[in-house]
Image 1 (tube, helix red, strand yellow):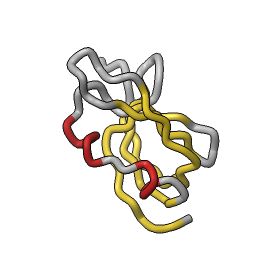
Image 2 (image 1 turned 45 degrees about the horizontal axis):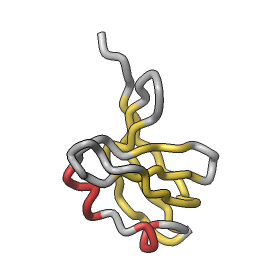
Image 3 (image 1 turned 90 degrees about the vertical axis):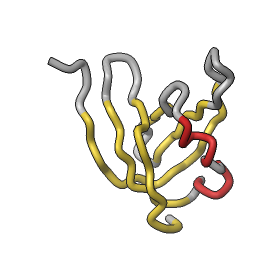
Amino acid sequence: MTDYMTFTNTFNVDSIERLKNSTNGNPRFLFTLSNGFTMATPIDAGWVYAIVPDAIVGTTIRVKYRTPRRQNKLFDYEILGIA
């Protein structure tokens, strides 16, 4: 049995905050969505380097995310348009 479920939904992005780098030095971000949901990017995920917060904030994105016990983890996203 897994400790999480995976979902795909569409949300507007209110803000993106840069978190402390992982122990390996890779970037992490915390997305705050219009419904008050927050999602952190996974630790040491290579695709996180492509995130440009200024280009994403204020847009509508389709996200794939997991809900483990502690915090929602953003698994993937696609920009759909400006909110």
